[in-house]
Image (cartoon, rainbow, N blue to C red; front, top):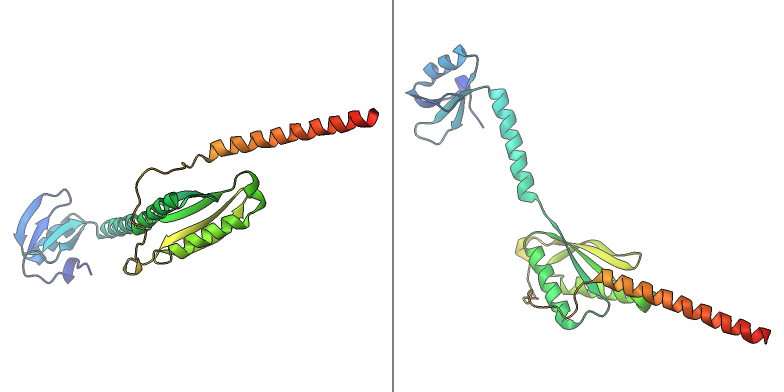
Length: 218
């Protein structure tokens, strides 16, 4: 608790002006008199110093600034970043191990991780494969992560959100978190390939339709 004015109990205190200039060491009663002359308070800002340090300032403003600073420090300390790791239905074991190693690293640093699996081509007809993969990831990371959001389908992808377990409970299993991936996460290129496949299939269907029509006329 911060002591101010008559509540300051030390026999002598070091006095500092609002601009940082030091007035020297004196009894608190004398320091308080100087503070009142300028319409301010005498605030003990370093009680454990020898002698304690007191500052002549506006206590209301000082209290507000201290509360604001404490809030900023708390926000900064608790700030987390959202990371994202992408998988495919056919992600090979080598890449799987590296990606889980990266997820463990992010979790160990206190970050949340969004895991996304993108379907491609005919995989869209077998959505259960993506859920199986994400449930496998949940099992493999049970010593590192909580599941904040379970696997959820969104368009041609399924995703989930993981958050780190308390530090004392974390136990890493995947230590290989660096290296070259066999398949990069180029989902944009995959989407273009899928669009080409759809267009090609459509043209083939039109062509088959025209052939059937010609046979009927003949």
